[in-house]
Length: 352
Image (cartoon, rainbow, N blue to C red; front, side, top):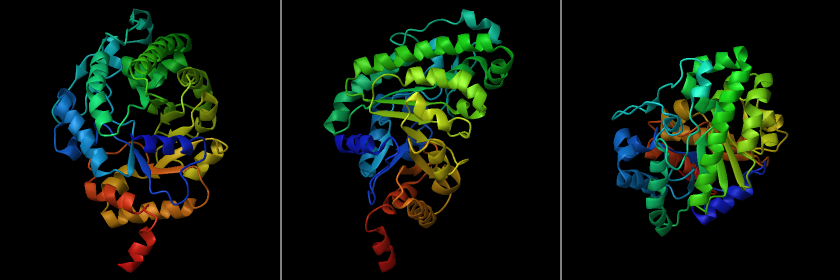
């Protein structure tokens, strides 16, 4: 993102939200949306540096009034982090990549390696792509702002299998902690390496939907301590994505250091801000699939205006969709979203 966008994002976090009348919105964009929108296959997006870069450049140039997070994301979908542990990764032209489990039971946790993010799995390719892109990004006013990864529970669920991991939390808590300890230590190394390679980084971004499958007691034991470690490094923006339910966890996000949160549609913005005692800024929460992707542009604009009116003068919000940008969002729908936030949107709408 640009320097101006970064400054705006930094000023909005921690419960402040964007200033009244700001035209800005922010969206997580990555491989579920960008390849299809740019007219290329998912596999080409991952396989070709130029196509990956041009898709991201097209997005920032087509929508200069949108903040895209993390911005020019170097990723291989859900395979990125599990690949370092030896996960078999499946890629195809049009489907999202998938990382297969490396364990058949939690008892195998001691067999897991301690990956080196500089050399293991797909992580060196992520770094090389970003190093290649960095001067090209800077030439168009963009900077690398975030160290990024999936969260510890998310990665652990890929290594063991989601159902198996959730069962293990209840039946084998000690071994589950051992797995989460190993994954968290790896993620700490991975974020540290990203900061070392790219000094422009001043944000931490974690994505972990498995948090939303835990009750409060389990979150406090298996989620909060590890997230707190990962958000401990100094950073201006500490951004968390969990678009599963957050009722049991959102109240504890500020204690972990999180100051910007992207939820799903299960809870209202008011409810999340109340749970966090106003210490979070919410990035949301227009329904992504059923509104932003599925409805005509005028209905998207209507939903955006309704959300803005409900939050008028109350703060705590950066307009976005709930969760990341979904597949199928058209240029027209995203433009309608952004135009609905323009300071003169109401007067222009009445004039027509």
